[in-house]
Length: 145
Image (cartoon, rainbow, N blue to C red; front, side, top):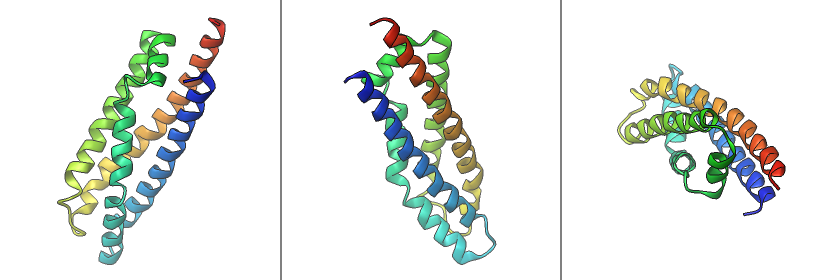
C-alpha cells in the first residue's frame, strides 16, 4: 500500500467511526429519556450499530495491517504504546456493549448509557490522537525516503 493510500484509508476509517459515534450519541440521548417509546427507539438504534461496533473491533485489532505496521515502525515506543492502550480500552467497551445489547430492554437500556458515553469519549480521543500519529508517520516516512 502506498503511503498516500494508507493515509486515505485511515482517514476514511476515521470518518466511518465518527459517523457511527454520532449514531450512538443520538441513540444514547433517546435511551436517557423518561418516555418509554423514546427509550425503545433508542434501544433499536443502539442495536442497529452492531455491525459498526464490530468494525471498530476490527480497527482495534488490526495490529498486523500495513497501516499499523507503519505505526510500529515509525513511532516511538510511547506513542505506539498509547495507540495500543487506546485500542484495548475501546475494545473492552465495545465488547461490553455487544455483550449486553441483546439482553437489555427499553426499561433497562439506560444502564448502558455510562458505557456508551465512555466509549464515545474514548473514540473521540483516539481518532484525534491516531490522526496526529498518522501525520507523524508520514513525516518520518518522507525523511527516510
